[in-house]
Image (tube, rainbow, N blue to C red):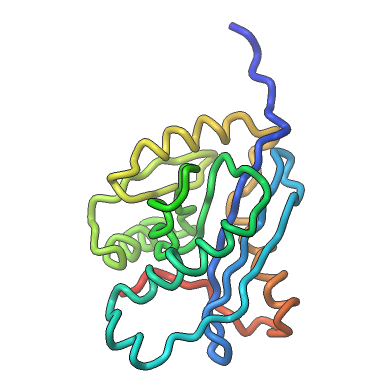
Length: 191
């Protein structure tokens, strides 16, 4: 069997949506190479739903804003061909039908509570799950094949880095760009 040679052209996408009480929802996309070095970074202008949208969209508002609007806009700006898209917000999983790359949620530490919260937020107790380098990944069951593809791709990266770390970079970059100084929270599953 030939040794596995890391793919240095592999572009890994990390997408996060943060919420600021003053500004609304702000998305960030960081594309990294297999060594964890940045290839591209994009962030959106803040998006604040009005009261009519909150009423009309009801519980579908967050997946619509985070996945279909913000994530789609960020991915349209990205020049790198992403081999995989990892997100830290269950609502962003709504972007999956619009992209070719496999998409998975990187489940935060305290995974039992986070997964339970994710299941209730998505309204789907049957999330597909898999672990890579001790880090739980999840996606909707209709895209369960994405997890196997993602794990195989991640096995080809040069170093097994912390998949949560790029989301911290995104958060700090958004805070810097917006002058928010720690006033944003990652969007979590709608309860």
